[in-house]
Length: 287
Image (cartoon, rainbow, N blue to C red; front, side):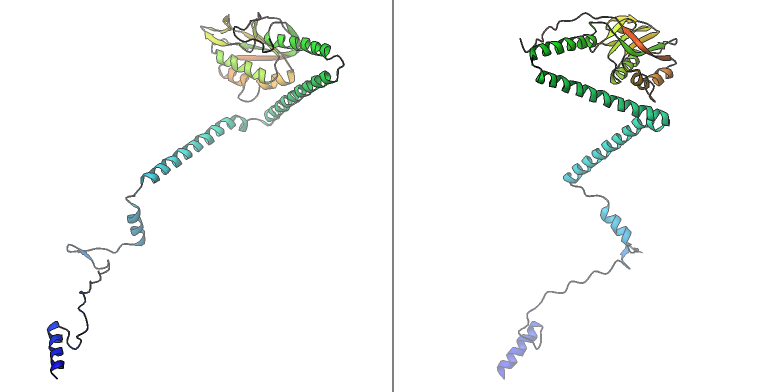
C-alpha cells in the first residue's frame, strides 16, 4: 500500500499522473501556416503561382565558374558558325543570281579543267612507260629532257611561244583600273589553263608582281598604261568563259566603268622574253 502511494506521488510530482515510466518529451514544433493568409505587416500576401515560383528559383542566377566558362565557349562556337554561314551565303550570291547559260558555262569550265588534269596525268604516265620500255633509256631520257626544257622555257618566259588563245583589251578612260584587278585577270587566266601571258609587251611569269603607279600600273617594275592588252596562249574555249563568269573579271572591270573586249584567235604570238635568272642559293641536288 505504501509502495503504491509513493509511486503515485512521484508520478504526480513529475507531471505525468498514472504513468511513472514515461519520459518527458520536448515540446512539439508548430507547423508553419501555408502561404495563404500570411501577412506582411498589416497587409495579407498573395499566394505565389507556379510560374512565379519558377522565376524566383531561376533569377537571380547562381552560376559557378565552370558553368560560366562553358557558356562563353558555347557563345564563341555559335558566333563562329554564324559567321561561317554568312560568308558562305555571300560567296554563293553570285551563283544564285546567275542565268542558266552562265551556270552551264561554269560547269563546262570545271569539266575542261578536269580534262586538262587527266591529260597531264596520262602524259606523265606515258613518259614513265616509255622510259621503262625503251631499250636505250639514256637516249629516251635525253629526248624527254629536251622536250621538258622547251616547256619550262615557255613557262619561265625565256623562249617565245605561239599557239591558239585570246587577246583581251581593257580600255580605262576613267582611270579606275588598279593593279589588283589586272592581277585577278592573270590569276583567272592561269586557273583556266593559260600557258603564256604577255601584257603590254611584258612577259608574265610565276614571279611577276603588279603595283599601282600614278595613272598606270607597273609589271615587274615596268610602267604600263591603258589600254591594257593581254595576249594569252591556251584553249580559247576555256579562257574566254573564265573571264566572263558572273562576278568575274569582266563584270568587275565593267563596274569600274572600264571597257573589256575579248577575241579568240587560232594563232597568238607571245614573243616578249625574260632573262634567265640564276638562283643565288638554290642548287641542283644531283650536283
